[in-house]
Structures are given as C-alpha cells and as structure tokens.
Image (cartoon, rainbow over all chains, first blue to last red):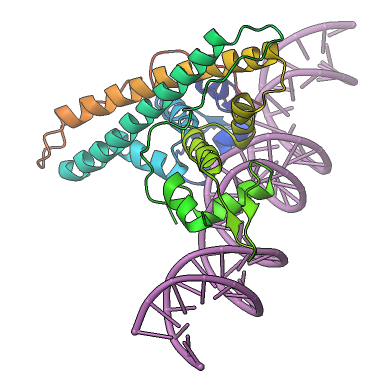
Length: 136
Length: 136
DNA sequence: ATATAAGGTTCCCGGAACTGGAAGTTCAAG
DNA sequence: CTTGAACTTCCAGTTCCGGGAACCTTATAT
C-alpha cells in the first residue's frame, strides 16, 4: 500500500508518516520503484500513533507504548510496569476530559444562544484542586 | 502571588507561564519590584491551560476555550457554536481514550509479569475502523 | 504514443510550543 | 553583609511537524 492510502487509513498526513519513519517509529518496505509500501501492521501502528498523539502523549511516550505492543523480547515485568504507569496517566486524563466535557455541556445548555450572554458558567472549569508539581 | 507559586499551583513550568503571557493568554499584574503577580483568577486560567494542553488541544484551541470562559461581551450564539463544536471533539477524545485504556488494561491483566512474554494483546489497540481524513 | 495531472521521492526551510542557559536584579536567611 | 534562591529579560536550541521546490513514476485522456 502506498503512502497516500496509508494516510487515508491512519488519519495522518503523509508528511507526518515520513517524519515518523525518520525518527524510527516504523520502517515500511520499499517497492521496486522506491515507493514506500505499507503493510496492514504498519497501518496499525500509524493509526495507533494518530490516536495517542491526538490524546496528548508525546512521541517518546508513543514509542514506549508501541514497544509494549511490539517488542516480544522484553521482560514481561518491564512491560507490565510501563503499561500500569501509562494506564494511570490515561485514567487521569479521562477524568479531566470528562470534567471539561461536563463544564462545556453545562455551558451549552445554559447559554440561550440569543443576545443575553447569561453564561456565568465554567467558573469551575479549571477543576477541583489537584495541581501536580511543575515539570521543570 | 509570585510565578513560583503560580507554577506549583497550576502544574506548569515558570518558563511556560511566561511564554503564555508572551503570546497573550494572560496578563498578570506586576508588583513594584517588577515581579509578576498572579491573582487567583490567573492561576485558574493557568490550571485550565495545563489541563487542556495536556489533553491534546492546541494553544489556539485553548485560547478559544478561554474566550468562552472569560469573554462576556461575546455573542451568545457564537459562544454556543464554539462550545458545541469543542464538545463534540472532547467526546470523540473521550471515546478514543477509553479504548486505549481498555487495551492497556487487557495487557496488564493478561501479561503475567514473569518471563513468559505471553502478551499477544493490543492487536486491536489501534481501535475499530474509524479513520478520519488526513489533516493535510 | 503522448501530454498531463496526480501521486510518489528527497531536501531544506519555517513555524508552533516550548526549554535551557546566560547575565543581571531582588529578596529572605544566616 | 554576603550568599543563595527566586525573579527578570533575552537569545538560542529542540520537538514535531507543514510548506514548497525539484525531480521521478504512474494513471488517464486524447
């Protein structure tokens, strides 16, 4: 499969797909004409990358997640540890996203859509007190 | 409140906070000594930015979301339209994130943690067929 | 058979969103 | 009063791509 089709099926621009190859996230075959040739498994990886990137994971985190998926030679304990930590992060994100959704729903419901801007909502949009330490 | 405290409470590095000021996402007061002085509402905005950025929204999308939150002078119909569109996006993300979580859970449960790497899971980690068109 | 357009290739530059480091100022502690 | 932590500005570098040039290959239409 050519890069165009892979792009369609993964939801990633061709540019991005080539970039991911550059940085070693996948290595598709090459056809005789020099064109990249994507297998179903390649597309799988790409779709996974599309998703996890759009959900706020860094490329390096995606690389880790992919290694869970693909690296059969790894120590299971390792895999488990990484997976569990990622799982916790995902669950935290789910909570935050749900809160954001609720706040927005509230806004949409209570905002009439006419010219009276009665939307004193979202005041708790930043969520309950649960600040984590700064990354730097 | 100084930038250090604001950083603690928002979960954002001071560097990032200054950057957000540069690009006009907030404008904290300045104390007599030239130090930035963050109000509770500033910290609110920062925390919101931390969250929505970590959930995969671009800075421009965050700006939009913040405008929903803060700009009372806006046409309600506008607000409503933006909010609804963001809401749909958030719901899509929630679904994807939940699928990712399920896949990882499955991995964690089925991977024994010993040296038998029996984790032939995640084969559907990229999710059901629902590719969207490429962005470029 | 041949133009022509559509889709592929590499390469390089630019932009978004930070991040690190230097050089200097201010503040709180010993 | 000095020492160190926390603040300031400014500039440079990194990550994760996106645009566009220059070129090649494949499918279509005449």
